[in-house]
Length: 128
Image (cartoon, rainbow, N blue to C red):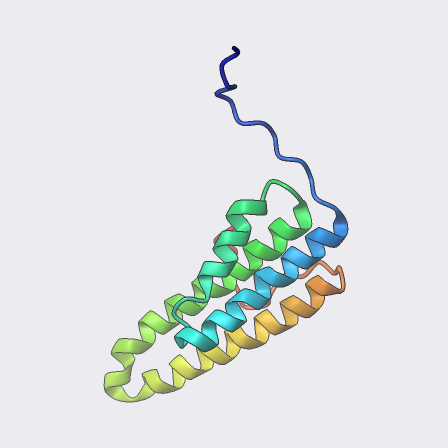
């Protein structure tokens, strides 16, 4: 009886259609999670897609990374907004951060579904 191979096998690439679908989900999942969690758990869907499929296709990797980057910058702005709520400005920045994330994910989902490469504006590239 042979022993199992301790080294992981390289993952097989996925088709362009699957890449488009997963890239669309990478932007769509945060939209749904943002609505259900008031913006606090939007990163979970992006993170799962990124970790599971980052090595299986460049298109899905790029869109999942962009989705994560939008969620990271949104999270930073939301954290900054909490203390700013003491001076009432935080309520505005909190809402604007959620609207920004919603719009960026909506545009990203449409672009991904159309098979277009896209980098969201005003978003640093924390994840590549």
